Image 1 (cartoon, rainbow, N blue to C red):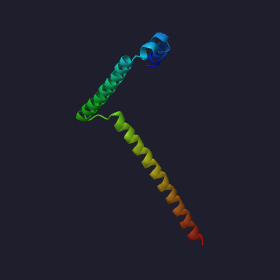
Image 2: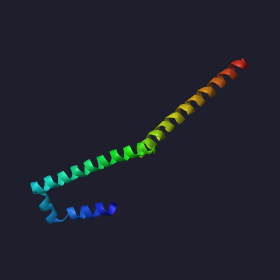
Image 3: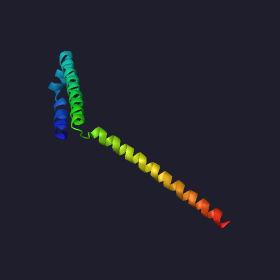
Image 4: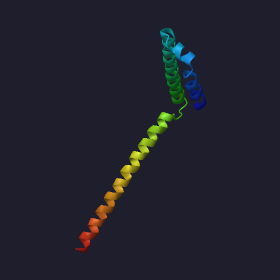
Length: 97
């Protein structure tokens, strides 16, 4: 993908391409192409989600959500452990008095 971007960047630096890109019809065609690509990608994502759901498979979105939930639970666990340690320290201090 990086190679493709590099080639595209070099192509856009060509004066002939720059002149061509100034044509409103070419600009509209490029914009339509980009919109079409976005619609196709969106539809593909939607269908992948449907298939994953039917096959009971985890998607990248599901995995990211689970990772966020795990991080949140780990933070809650650390905080609970700290509260327990503090409570034990208070109890020990009171027992000594």
